[in-house]
Length: 326
Image 1: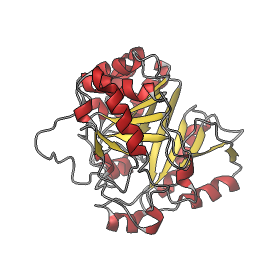
Image 2: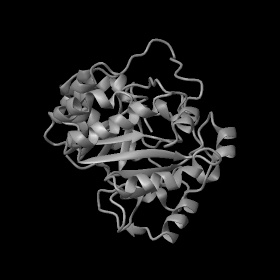
Image 3: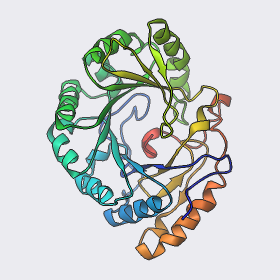
Image 4: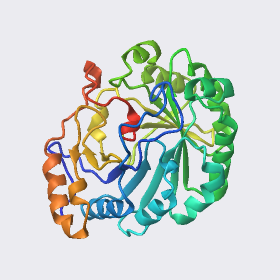
């Protein structure tokens, strides 16, 4: 089977698979009013996930990130990890989490096959953490990160969304943390979504400003590996940790796109923005449907646009990132 490729020569080996859009945090940039279900949830079942991953693996997917909402809210989260790990074509299994269950389950998830983990920590000030997330869980999350490091994960990343007049003063604290801690710190530039125009206008901070500051302090740009996505990574000889900048408003951000997204209800999203998604669920009911599913994937990729058009103020139909998994 030929690898998934679009009309611009981009190849897709990375699947971001949401397993729930439920989240127990109320982050101000994503779900400020908390999770509000739309009818009775009907998320992908374990067998549907197995069929989905099997089809993607057959056309070149080698990395799967399990996302949400908060994916660890699924009672069968460990079983999902195990199901993905059972596919020998998948070389890397990752997840993104708010970390609230990490302290208790890090070793269990590692033993099931999870190898990389991103934890959202938008501030190292417990009061600011509470202000942004709506949850007083800072200490639990930090203990969870320690548990992940102890469990042996090959890569632990910290995600922090940059927010002007909120956590933008935290940079020195973050840098002090990674001086002696071997983690990757990812600063994510705030993206405008359908529900967040006013918030974006008040709190958007250009990633280019952080990049200039890092370079002034001796951080060096790391040349990307072939499998790397759109993050720009930096290292410093005096620091054990690294920094990555995700700057969706930067020129040519989409040129290195290597990922596709499937929502918790089985819709294929070619981009985090711009379109409603294409239903795949009717072809996830049996392994015998795999060829038809793969044909649909190839067909839909021909519709993928060259860029997301965020820089033109076009936010598409995505109301908040929890609905697709970021």
